Each structure stands twice: as C-alpha cells, then as structure tokens.
Figure 1 (tube, rainbow, N blue to C red):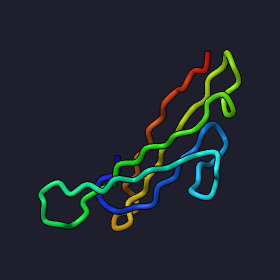
Figure 2: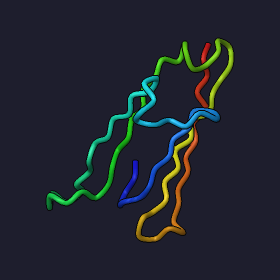
Figure 3: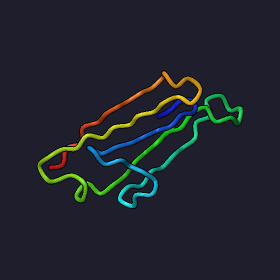
Figure 4: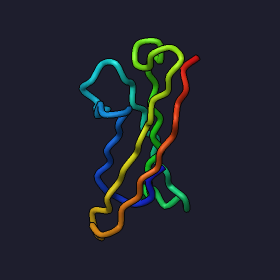
Length: 85
C-alpha cells in the first residue's frame, strides 16, 4: 500500500516486475480515505504463476519500494519471502 504519490518498484528476486511483463498481473486500487474524491493512496496486488517463477523446494524474495514524489528522501521498502513447496 502506498499513501500519497510516488514512484513504485517491485521485484521478485532480481527480476523487476513491470506492467509490460506478461508473467505478472499488477492490480491497483485507489484509496480515498475521507471520501473527498481525491486519491490519497494506492493499494497494489501482484499475481503470478509460482510454478514458473520459483523452483520447487526453494523460495523467492518479493520487494516493494516506493519513493515519495514531493519528499524524495522519504522511501519505504517492504519484503516478503515466498516459499514454493
């Protein structure tokens, strides 16, 4: 989830996830926290076929990074380890 406006980047291990990469589907929902019809943030979901992207018995690291447009020294990065059995 991203509150405010910024540039977001996503990776699965060393592969950057982009809208152009057909292996991934990125969905974005707009957040309007006070019903003033102004977008306050964004909620991202990413789906992919783990059988194609993560070898059986291993895991992959998903990373989300966002840098604020108005305050570029403000960044956030979150990671999630995704095991594939």
